[in-house]
Length: 251
Length: 310
Ligand SMILES: [Fe+2]
Ligand SMILES: [Fe+2]
Image (cartoon, rainbow over all chains, first blue to last red; front, side, top):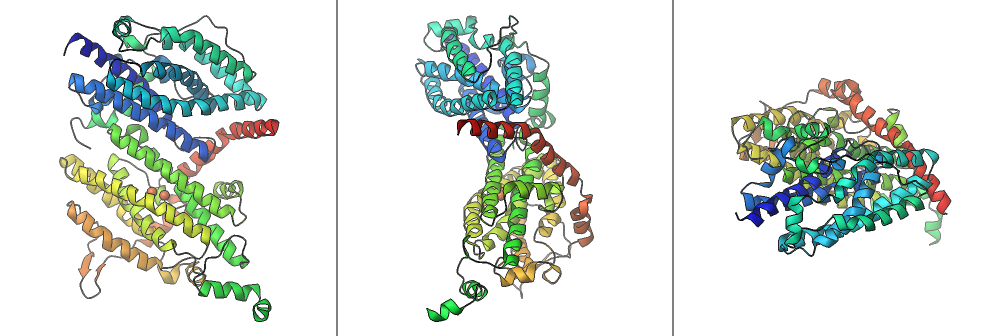
């Protein structure tokens, strides 16, 4: 494996971890949603993320000689590289959909940029993902409006979610050495340059929903270095149970 | 024409049932027919929805990513079945709200098999193979039920159920091909789910409260015992093919009948679980109520938003 391959492997794994952890959280909504229709819609979104995790882990796995399942089920907390915002517990329905909204507005820009990747496989995954994100984004924008303009309680819950999540959004735009190198090679998408556009779009949508863009100064980062909240370990112990209890078997 | 106009609606209804014509929502129908259908369709809808819980119990713990995706898609299908069926019940004038209310107050039932717990991954295989397998036998028969919207819902649903059955069986095949621990897990699941699956077809025909009238109305097309026999006949060879043992010492091929003979169901166990003493009865209902309660503010917001947009 040459240097670029090794960097690409790590890049695909972290993007895979984002999709994996978020998909796992969305699975927790099964049979818990406010309507049957919403239960099915959340399952749709979860399936997209799980599918995305599989594609990215397979890309990485082909380079590093591990299977998608080894990558998902046999790495511990410190090896996971997902964004912290994705590992936070699912919270109430407003928390889940507001997080989805912040993420969708980011992914809409990010995967669009990634379709230009010099790596064909990554570009193809980004192309497929971009279409899925367009659907997620229409839905989460609509929910933000419903929360903000629905009842006093829905607005209160959506605002509380925004306030809690806001300290985690900076990490979506942080570029470390790994990504800087891959950006220079035309393989990774530059997330830092997406910040201004994202901020404008999100501000517009939040205000249109009569909610307030949080004015917080706290910010938490660490996922890319494997420095996680305490929630991730529990998510993984549940998700990895079978492969840990019965290692090396085929299912 | 003059003759037809003299016919009572009841007479016309009877003739249509006799002629195997479908009854449609706007057609006149006897009150008992309508009530019987609402009871059966809503019970069916609730079963699809409550059934999401025991399977969802393994969604966050599925052993591979592929299995997780298949399971999630299956659970999503079951929710979709619930939706079609609630819509079919709505054509009879029963709103989803009142049907869910009847579930929560214990006036409506759901398939008692979902009161059993899913304890190991093999239970997910057993449910797909046996529970979906039994559901298909019943639902294929219902494709020719006399009420049009119900019959059409069954046609759509059956296509997906056969996928579920195959996917469940595939989980069992994998376990049976695996090591001793995996084979034991598969056998244990079969041991626990076999009899409850046979119970899914309901009491013997002679003891079935609604059966005779349902058969006359052609809501029900085949008897509980006939359907159960069909399920046994198709499932036993599948178990044998992967070296699993059906937990029934009386099970034997009867060449004269062309069917398997099998042992008597433990009806005390059946009644025990139906009447609330299964491991999960309260859990399933409480879970559904809790999710409904937690979602109330969301549904309120949806309504308020829709009103403001109008
Ligand atoms: Fe179903
Ligand atoms: Fe099914």
